[in-house]
Structures are given as structure tokens and as C-alpha cells.
Image (cartoon, rainbow, N blue to C red; front, side):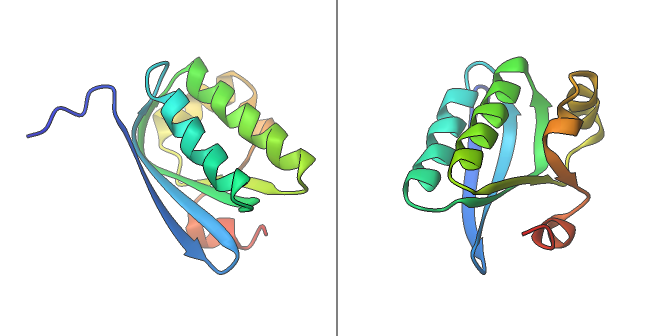
Length: 117
């Protein structure tokens, strides 16, 4: 079994004009900069409608939250949109404690999220 410590996997797919980024692993101080770079690469390539699928994210640190915040701010300046979906209970607890559930658009699943665009 490969060592996935300190790794975040990011798969990209298109749903119409929305770019779906499926994250897998932990979003912490080590992995967030890498995830942020991939997300910003998408934005810089003109993809301003982003859906982050968190169904396989099992941990979110303050660094991960900063990445979400910087992504949200960048997309706002470009009239884009960021929606999160399929957030686990543990990660949702972190988002609620920090008030991020009021800052970010979060839906139960991809189908719900795609209706937001």
C-alpha cells in the first residue's frame, strides 16, 4: 500500500461549463499549497466555475481553510463561483466552528451543487 501521508489527490472533470475538482486525502499545512496551486492553475486557465467535491477529504486544517478562502476571493474578483459538495461530518464541523459554512456555498452532493451555477 503506497504511503499517502502528506499527499492530496486531485482529479479534474468537466460538467458542462463547471470544472469539478475531486479532492482526496487531507488538506493540511503540507498539502494545501499543492492543492491551491492546482486550483489556481484551473482559474488561471479561465475556469471560473469551480465545484470542489470533498467526499474523500477526511481532514481540513486552518491551512486548508485559507486555501478555500483565497480561492473564493479570487473567483469573486473574476465573477466566478466556488461551491463545495459532499463534505464529511468531521470536515463540516471544522467549517461550522470557524463560521466558514456562512462564507462558502456547501451542498449535499454534486447534483445539488451543479444547480447553483
